[in-house]
Length: 400
Image (tube, rainbow, N blue to C red; front, side, top):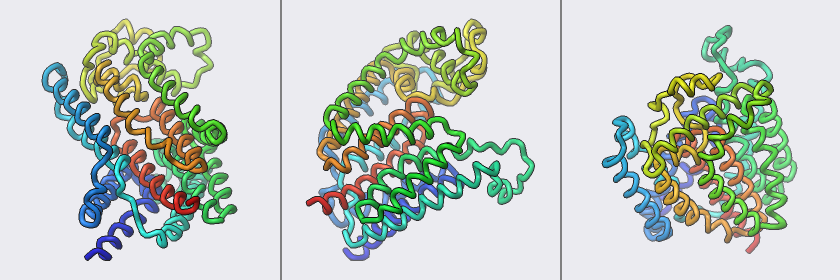
Protein backbone atom coordinates (compact mmCIF):
# COMPACT_ATOMS: atom_id res chain seq x y z
CA UNK A 1 0.00 0.00 0.00
CA UNK A 2 2.71 2.50 1.02
CA UNK A 3 4.86 2.12 -2.15
CA UNK A 4 1.78 2.49 -4.35
CA UNK A 5 0.71 5.67 -2.52
CA UNK A 6 4.22 7.07 -2.86
CA UNK A 7 4.32 6.29 -6.60
CA UNK A 8 0.92 7.94 -7.06
CA UNK A 9 2.12 11.02 -5.22
CA UNK A 10 5.29 11.23 -7.30
CA UNK A 11 3.41 10.69 -10.58
CA UNK A 12 0.95 13.53 -10.00
CA UNK A 13 3.66 15.81 -8.62
CA UNK A 14 5.83 15.29 -11.71
CA UNK A 15 2.91 15.66 -14.11
CA UNK A 16 1.69 18.80 -12.37
CA UNK A 17 5.08 20.52 -12.39
CA UNK A 18 6.07 19.45 -15.91
CA UNK A 19 2.72 20.12 -17.61
CA UNK A 20 1.68 23.25 -15.70
CA UNK A 21 3.17 25.84 -18.09
CA UNK A 22 2.39 23.96 -21.35
CA UNK A 23 -1.23 23.47 -20.27
CA UNK A 24 -1.39 27.13 -19.24
CA UNK A 25 -0.26 28.16 -22.71
CA UNK A 26 -3.09 26.13 -24.24
CA UNK A 27 -5.74 27.31 -21.75
CA UNK A 28 -5.01 29.63 -18.83
CA UNK A 29 -7.94 28.20 -16.84
CA UNK A 30 -6.06 24.90 -16.62
CA UNK A 31 -3.56 26.50 -14.24
CA UNK A 32 -6.13 26.59 -11.44
CA UNK A 33 -7.32 23.06 -12.21
CA UNK A 34 -3.78 21.67 -12.29
CA UNK A 35 -2.87 23.23 -8.95
CA UNK A 36 -6.08 22.05 -7.26
CA UNK A 37 -5.58 18.50 -8.55
CA UNK A 38 -1.93 18.33 -7.48
CA UNK A 39 -2.68 19.87 -4.07
CA UNK A 40 -5.53 17.45 -3.37
CA UNK A 41 -3.41 14.45 -4.41
CA UNK A 42 -0.61 15.63 -2.10
CA UNK A 43 -3.08 16.03 0.76
CA UNK A 44 -4.67 12.59 0.26
CA UNK A 45 -1.38 10.71 -0.16
CA UNK A 46 0.15 12.50 2.82
CA UNK A 47 -2.90 11.55 4.88
CA UNK A 48 -2.22 7.85 4.16
CA UNK A 49 1.55 8.07 4.65
CA UNK A 50 2.21 10.75 7.31
CA UNK A 51 -1.03 12.34 8.62
CA UNK A 52 0.87 14.52 11.09
CA UNK A 53 2.45 16.42 8.18
CA UNK A 54 -0.96 17.68 7.09
CA UNK A 55 -1.14 20.20 9.91
CA UNK A 56 0.05 23.70 9.00
CA UNK A 57 1.72 26.03 11.45
CA UNK A 58 -0.68 26.97 14.27
CA UNK A 59 -0.28 30.70 13.63
CA UNK A 60 -1.41 30.13 10.03
CA UNK A 61 -4.41 28.09 11.17
CA UNK A 62 -5.55 30.70 13.70
CA UNK A 63 -4.83 33.61 11.36
CA UNK A 64 -6.76 32.05 8.50
CA UNK A 65 -9.70 31.17 10.75
CA UNK A 66 -9.90 34.77 11.99
CA UNK A 67 -9.68 35.99 8.40
CA UNK A 68 -12.47 33.60 7.33
CA UNK A 69 -14.64 34.61 10.27
CA UNK A 70 -14.25 38.27 9.41
CA UNK A 71 -14.98 37.76 5.69
CA UNK A 72 -18.03 35.59 6.42
CA UNK A 73 -19.47 38.02 8.96
CA UNK A 74 -19.02 41.08 6.74
CA UNK A 75 -20.47 39.35 3.67
CA UNK A 76 -23.54 38.27 5.62
CA UNK A 77 -24.03 41.43 7.70
CA UNK A 78 -22.65 44.50 5.87
CA UNK A 79 -22.12 43.63 2.20
CA UNK A 80 -25.04 44.67 -0.01
CA UNK A 81 -23.75 43.21 -3.31
CA UNK A 82 -25.71 39.96 -3.81
CA UNK A 83 -23.28 38.38 -6.35
CA UNK A 84 -20.45 39.09 -3.88
CA UNK A 85 -22.24 37.14 -1.14
CA UNK A 86 -22.32 34.01 -3.31
CA UNK A 87 -18.74 34.43 -4.55
CA UNK A 88 -16.65 34.69 -1.43
CA UNK A 89 -16.75 31.02 -0.36
CA UNK A 90 -15.01 29.76 -3.52
CA UNK A 91 -12.40 32.52 -3.36
CA UNK A 92 -11.59 31.94 0.30
CA UNK A 93 -11.35 28.17 -0.30
CA UNK A 94 -8.74 28.66 -3.04
CA UNK A 95 -6.69 30.97 -0.84
CA UNK A 96 -6.93 28.45 1.99
CA UNK A 97 -5.64 25.67 -0.26
CA UNK A 98 -2.62 27.78 -1.26
CA UNK A 99 -1.87 28.56 2.40
CA UNK A 100 -2.28 24.90 3.37
CA UNK A 101 0.22 23.77 0.75
CA UNK A 102 2.63 26.57 1.68
CA UNK A 103 2.59 25.96 5.44
CA UNK A 104 2.67 22.16 5.64
CA UNK A 105 5.08 19.42 4.56
CA UNK A 106 3.20 17.75 1.69
CA UNK A 107 5.88 17.55 -1.01
CA UNK A 108 8.39 15.19 0.56
CA UNK A 109 9.40 12.57 -2.06
CA UNK A 110 12.14 10.02 -2.63
CA UNK A 111 15.43 11.94 -3.23
CA UNK A 112 16.40 9.52 -6.00
CA UNK A 113 13.44 10.73 -8.07
CA UNK A 114 14.33 14.42 -7.82
CA UNK A 115 16.98 14.38 -10.55
CA UNK A 116 14.44 13.04 -13.05
CA UNK A 117 11.98 15.80 -12.12
CA UNK A 118 14.71 18.41 -12.58
CA UNK A 119 15.52 17.31 -16.13
CA UNK A 120 11.90 16.97 -17.23
CA UNK A 121 10.94 20.32 -15.73
CA UNK A 122 13.90 22.10 -17.37
CA UNK A 123 13.05 20.64 -20.78
CA UNK A 124 9.38 21.52 -20.34
CA UNK A 125 10.12 25.18 -19.58
CA UNK A 126 12.71 25.40 -22.35
CA UNK A 127 10.29 24.10 -24.97
CA UNK A 128 7.52 26.35 -23.63
CA UNK A 129 9.80 29.37 -24.05
CA UNK A 130 10.72 28.36 -27.60
CA UNK A 131 7.02 27.92 -28.44
CA UNK A 132 6.19 31.38 -27.08
CA UNK A 133 9.07 32.99 -28.97
CA UNK A 134 7.77 31.46 -32.21
CA UNK A 135 4.26 32.70 -31.45
CA UNK A 136 5.40 36.21 -30.53
CA UNK A 137 7.52 36.53 -33.68
CA UNK A 138 4.80 35.21 -35.98
CA UNK A 139 1.60 36.74 -34.57
CA UNK A 140 0.41 33.53 -32.87
CA UNK A 141 0.66 31.54 -36.10
CA UNK A 142 0.49 28.14 -34.38
CA UNK A 143 -2.61 29.05 -32.38
CA UNK A 144 -4.23 30.57 -35.47
CA UNK A 145 -3.56 27.44 -37.48
CA UNK A 146 -4.73 24.99 -34.81
CA UNK A 147 -7.89 26.99 -34.07
CA UNK A 148 -8.65 27.68 -37.75
CA UNK A 149 -8.46 31.45 -37.18
CA UNK A 150 -5.67 32.33 -39.63
CA UNK A 151 -6.99 35.78 -40.53
CA UNK A 152 -8.93 36.56 -37.37
CA UNK A 153 -7.92 40.07 -36.18
CA UNK A 154 -9.30 39.32 -32.70
CA UNK A 155 -6.47 36.89 -31.91
CA UNK A 156 -4.20 38.87 -29.58
CA UNK A 157 -0.76 37.92 -28.31
CA UNK A 158 -1.92 39.02 -24.86
CA UNK A 159 -3.66 35.63 -24.61
CA UNK A 160 -0.24 34.30 -23.52
CA UNK A 161 0.33 36.93 -20.81
CA UNK A 162 -0.62 34.69 -17.90
CA UNK A 163 1.53 31.80 -19.10
CA UNK A 164 4.39 34.22 -19.71
CA UNK A 165 4.09 35.63 -16.19
CA UNK A 166 4.12 32.11 -14.75
CA UNK A 167 7.08 31.09 -16.91
CA UNK A 168 9.25 34.03 -15.85
CA UNK A 169 8.61 33.11 -12.20
CA UNK A 170 9.14 29.35 -12.53
CA UNK A 171 12.34 29.59 -14.55
CA UNK A 172 14.44 30.80 -11.60
CA UNK A 173 13.88 27.95 -9.11
CA UNK A 174 14.10 25.43 -11.96
CA UNK A 175 17.34 26.97 -13.28
CA UNK A 176 18.77 27.00 -9.77
CA UNK A 177 17.82 23.34 -9.45
CA UNK A 178 19.55 22.52 -12.74
CA UNK A 179 22.61 24.44 -11.55
CA UNK A 180 22.67 22.41 -8.33
CA UNK A 181 22.69 19.26 -10.42
CA UNK A 182 25.73 20.50 -12.31
CA UNK A 183 23.81 21.37 -15.49
CA UNK A 184 25.18 24.90 -15.77
CA UNK A 185 24.61 25.14 -19.52
CA UNK A 186 20.98 24.09 -19.13
CA UNK A 187 20.44 26.61 -16.31
CA UNK A 188 21.94 29.54 -18.23
CA UNK A 189 20.21 28.58 -21.49
CA UNK A 190 16.87 28.31 -19.73
CA UNK A 191 17.18 31.80 -18.24
CA UNK A 192 18.30 33.35 -21.53
CA UNK A 193 15.55 31.81 -23.66
CA UNK A 194 12.85 32.69 -21.11
CA UNK A 195 14.00 36.29 -20.82
CA UNK A 196 13.98 36.51 -24.63
CA UNK A 197 10.37 35.31 -24.59
CA UNK A 198 9.51 37.96 -21.98
CA UNK A 199 11.19 40.64 -24.11
CA UNK A 200 9.08 39.67 -27.14
CA UNK A 201 5.84 39.24 -25.23
CA UNK A 202 2.99 41.70 -24.81
CA UNK A 203 3.26 41.48 -21.02
CA UNK A 204 5.05 44.53 -19.63
CA UNK A 205 4.88 43.11 -16.12
CA UNK A 206 6.66 39.91 -17.22
CA UNK A 207 9.41 41.99 -18.82
CA UNK A 208 9.87 44.06 -15.67
CA UNK A 209 9.90 40.92 -13.50
CA UNK A 210 12.55 39.31 -15.74
CA UNK A 211 14.82 42.28 -14.94
CA UNK A 212 13.78 42.65 -11.29
CA UNK A 213 14.36 39.07 -10.14
CA UNK A 214 18.13 38.83 -10.89
CA UNK A 215 18.71 42.29 -9.35
CA UNK A 216 16.85 41.41 -6.16
CA UNK A 217 18.57 38.01 -6.04
CA UNK A 218 22.01 39.67 -6.06
CA UNK A 219 21.02 42.13 -3.32
CA UNK A 220 19.45 39.36 -1.23
CA UNK A 221 22.54 37.20 -1.52
CA UNK A 222 24.57 39.86 0.32
CA UNK A 223 21.84 41.30 2.58
CA UNK A 224 19.24 38.54 3.00
CA UNK A 225 17.59 39.52 6.29
CA UNK A 226 17.67 43.24 5.53
CA UNK A 227 16.02 42.74 2.13
CA UNK A 228 13.43 40.41 3.67
CA UNK A 229 12.28 42.94 6.26
CA UNK A 230 12.63 45.89 3.89
CA UNK A 231 10.38 44.18 1.35
CA UNK A 232 7.81 43.13 3.93
CA UNK A 233 7.57 46.55 5.60
CA UNK A 234 7.49 48.34 2.24
CA UNK A 235 4.59 46.14 1.11
CA UNK A 236 2.65 46.81 4.34
CA UNK A 237 3.19 50.57 4.13
CA UNK A 238 2.20 50.65 0.46
CA UNK A 239 -0.93 48.59 1.14
CA UNK A 240 -2.14 51.05 3.79
CA UNK A 241 -1.28 54.10 1.68
CA UNK A 242 -2.56 52.74 -1.65
CA UNK A 243 -5.94 54.58 -1.68
CA UNK A 244 -4.23 57.91 -0.96
CA UNK A 245 -1.57 57.26 -3.60
CA UNK A 246 -4.00 56.19 -6.31
CA UNK A 247 -6.48 58.97 -5.55
CA UNK A 248 -3.74 61.50 -6.32
CA UNK A 249 -1.79 59.63 -9.02
CA UNK A 250 -4.18 60.57 -11.84
CA UNK A 251 -3.61 64.26 -11.14
CA UNK A 252 0.14 63.84 -10.77
CA UNK A 253 0.52 62.32 -14.24
CA UNK A 254 -1.73 64.81 -16.07
CA UNK A 255 1.10 66.99 -17.47
CA UNK A 256 2.61 64.02 -19.34
CA UNK A 257 -0.40 61.70 -19.70
CA UNK A 258 -0.09 61.89 -23.49
CA UNK A 259 3.20 59.97 -23.39
CA UNK A 260 1.88 57.17 -21.14
CA UNK A 261 0.93 53.92 -22.92
CA UNK A 262 -2.86 53.37 -23.11
CA UNK A 263 -2.76 50.16 -21.07
CA UNK A 264 -0.85 51.89 -18.26
CA UNK A 265 -3.15 54.92 -18.26
CA UNK A 266 -6.15 52.59 -18.17
CA UNK A 267 -4.74 50.92 -15.04
CA UNK A 268 -4.15 54.29 -13.38
CA UNK A 269 -7.76 55.27 -14.05
CA UNK A 270 -9.01 51.95 -12.64
CA UNK A 271 -6.89 52.45 -9.53
CA UNK A 272 -8.26 55.98 -9.16
CA UNK A 273 -11.88 54.76 -9.32
CA UNK A 274 -11.11 52.04 -6.78
CA UNK A 275 -9.45 54.53 -4.42
CA UNK A 276 -12.43 56.87 -4.54
CA UNK A 277 -14.72 53.92 -3.74
CA UNK A 278 -12.49 52.92 -0.80
CA UNK A 279 -12.97 56.32 0.83
CA UNK A 280 -16.74 55.84 0.59
CA UNK A 281 -16.64 52.56 2.58
CA UNK A 282 -13.24 52.41 4.28
CA UNK A 283 -13.86 50.05 7.20
CA UNK A 284 -15.62 46.90 5.97
CA UNK A 285 -15.47 47.20 2.18
CA UNK A 286 -18.00 46.27 -0.48
CA UNK A 287 -17.45 42.50 -0.78
CA UNK A 288 -15.31 40.19 -2.91
CA UNK A 289 -15.88 40.79 -6.63
CA UNK A 290 -17.44 44.25 -6.25
CA UNK A 291 -15.30 45.86 -8.99
CA UNK A 292 -17.40 44.52 -11.86
CA UNK A 293 -20.52 45.92 -10.15
CA UNK A 294 -19.03 49.30 -9.24
CA UNK A 295 -20.81 52.08 -11.11
CA UNK A 296 -18.88 54.88 -12.78
CA UNK A 297 -20.28 58.30 -11.81
CA UNK A 298 -20.52 60.85 -14.60
CA UNK A 299 -18.07 63.25 -12.92
CA UNK A 300 -15.42 60.51 -12.88
CA UNK A 301 -16.08 59.35 -16.43
CA UNK A 302 -15.31 62.89 -17.60
CA UNK A 303 -11.82 62.49 -16.11
CA UNK A 304 -11.13 59.11 -17.71
CA UNK A 305 -9.96 58.40 -21.22
CA UNK A 306 -9.98 54.59 -21.26
CA UNK A 307 -11.79 53.36 -18.14
CA UNK A 308 -15.38 53.88 -19.30
CA UNK A 309 -16.98 50.57 -18.21
CA UNK A 310 -16.59 48.51 -14.99
CA UNK A 311 -13.73 46.03 -15.06
CA UNK A 312 -13.38 42.59 -13.49
CA UNK A 313 -10.82 43.61 -10.85
CA UNK A 314 -8.61 46.62 -9.96
CA UNK A 315 -5.33 45.04 -11.22
CA UNK A 316 -3.75 45.78 -7.84
CA UNK A 317 -3.96 43.44 -4.85
CA UNK A 318 -3.53 46.16 -2.21
CA UNK A 319 -6.35 48.42 -3.39
CA UNK A 320 -8.49 45.37 -4.20
CA UNK A 321 -8.29 43.97 -0.67
CA UNK A 322 -9.07 47.37 0.85
CA UNK A 323 -11.94 47.92 -1.61
CA UNK A 324 -13.49 44.49 -1.01
CA UNK A 325 -12.68 43.81 2.65
CA UNK A 326 -12.10 47.25 4.13
CA UNK A 327 -9.27 48.45 6.32
CA UNK A 328 -10.00 45.82 8.98
CA UNK A 329 -9.89 43.00 6.45
CA UNK A 330 -6.69 44.36 4.92
CA UNK A 331 -5.08 44.51 8.37
CA UNK A 332 -6.05 40.90 9.18
CA UNK A 333 -4.79 39.68 5.80
CA UNK A 334 -1.44 41.45 6.22
CA UNK A 335 -1.02 39.80 9.63
CA UNK A 336 -1.75 36.44 8.01
CA UNK A 337 0.79 37.23 5.29
CA UNK A 338 3.43 38.09 7.89
CA UNK A 339 2.88 34.74 9.61
CA UNK A 340 3.02 32.92 6.26
CA UNK A 341 6.36 34.33 5.06
CA UNK A 342 8.34 33.86 8.27
CA UNK A 343 9.62 30.36 7.27
CA UNK A 344 11.40 31.98 4.32
CA UNK A 345 14.08 33.24 6.70
CA UNK A 346 15.09 29.65 7.51
CA UNK A 347 15.89 28.74 3.90
CA UNK A 348 19.63 28.21 3.18
CA UNK A 349 21.17 31.29 1.56
CA UNK A 350 21.76 30.09 -2.00
CA UNK A 351 18.11 29.19 -2.30
CA UNK A 352 16.91 32.06 -0.10
CA UNK A 353 18.13 34.70 -2.55
CA UNK A 354 16.15 33.05 -5.38
CA UNK A 355 13.07 32.59 -3.20
CA UNK A 356 12.95 36.23 -2.06
CA UNK A 357 13.64 37.51 -5.58
CA UNK A 358 10.80 35.42 -7.00
CA UNK A 359 8.57 36.57 -4.11
CA UNK A 360 9.34 40.15 -5.16
CA UNK A 361 8.29 39.21 -8.69
CA UNK A 362 5.03 37.73 -7.40
CA UNK A 363 4.32 40.87 -5.36
CA UNK A 364 5.03 43.18 -8.29
CA UNK A 365 2.79 41.16 -10.61
CA UNK A 366 0.03 41.21 -7.98
CA UNK A 367 0.28 44.99 -7.80
CA UNK A 368 0.06 45.72 -11.53
CA UNK A 369 -1.55 42.81 -13.37
CA UNK A 370 -3.91 40.15 -12.06
CA UNK A 371 -6.82 40.15 -9.66
CA UNK A 372 -5.91 38.86 -6.23
CA UNK A 373 -8.71 36.28 -6.13
CA UNK A 374 -8.33 35.00 -9.70
CA UNK A 375 -8.09 31.23 -9.50
CA UNK A 376 -5.44 31.08 -12.24
CA UNK A 377 -3.20 33.54 -10.38
CA UNK A 378 -3.62 31.74 -7.05
CA UNK A 379 -2.93 28.49 -8.92
CA UNK A 380 0.33 29.92 -10.25
CA UNK A 381 1.38 30.99 -6.75
CA UNK A 382 0.35 27.64 -5.27
CA UNK A 383 2.27 25.50 -7.75
CA UNK A 384 5.24 27.86 -7.54
CA UNK A 385 5.30 27.19 -3.79
CA UNK A 386 5.20 23.44 -4.47
CA UNK A 387 8.07 23.80 -6.94
CA UNK A 388 10.15 25.72 -4.40
CA UNK A 389 9.46 23.12 -1.71
CA UNK A 390 10.74 20.35 -3.99
CA UNK A 391 13.81 22.42 -4.92
CA UNK A 392 14.40 23.21 -1.24
CA UNK A 393 14.36 19.51 -0.40
CA UNK A 394 17.18 18.99 -2.90
CA UNK A 395 18.98 22.12 -1.64
CA UNK A 396 18.90 20.89 1.97
CA UNK A 397 20.27 17.53 0.86
CA UNK A 398 23.06 19.19 -1.14
CA UNK A 399 24.24 21.55 1.59
CA UNK A 400 23.74 19.23 4.56
